[in-house]
Length: 329
Image (cartoon, rainbow, N blue to C red; front, side):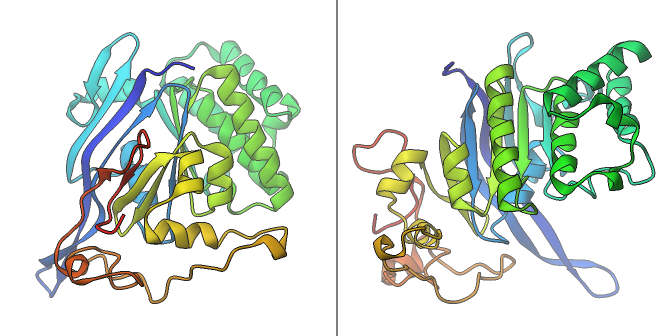
């Protein structure tokens, strides 16, 4: 596998203003993504996991620039154009880069226009990026349908004529039809049955091998992320609290929040299931996060230092590429 870095995220932030009153005065900010940094290597899957409200979807949308960031850098390493900061491109450069990073959304039905055939949904991005004439585009779409094990004749059907699993496969194929280098998968299987989830995940793995794709896989399901990912970042309240190799994270996790998430994974053999490490309380208000460590209000191990000093993401122990934001690790 190529160890070349494909995407570097440096100190990325996304703040949403909180307005109040008739004059819409800004009285604060919701810190959806707060100083997040990581790198993704060519051909690997980078998993992002956390409970609802942790900021993982906002981060995914910032990566594909569906939302403008508040600050930070997105450095993309292109084989032809070299290194470039996606946040400082001209309009023309940004347009050319759109096809390099694509996204697969959580809800496959709302991702497709119900008034248009699937063929039209595929043809529009191909036409916008000037990928051949009508005949060539038809061939590309037919090939993508064969790739996801659907009859190419189905391209003339409407979205409601497909099952949920078929629609998600179509959304994956649409993202791949413009030949991207990176695909952001935002909870692509959470709305599907377990048997269908397995089909989609195996399809994603097969496509990654055949096309040397790089994935950023976002999910709240740690068992799914473990199966898909090479590296995993655990997010809490807009920040990465633990970052490690997938195997190391599940075997030697250090952060109390990560331990709680892993202990919540359902086990087939109930007798061998360890005691659950439950996290009590609600997620703090991201517009008014607690002082010190964001997790100290729910952490059973928190001490006075945790309540006053914010921990920084730091390398822990002798494990390579294992970083934890915890004073007690």
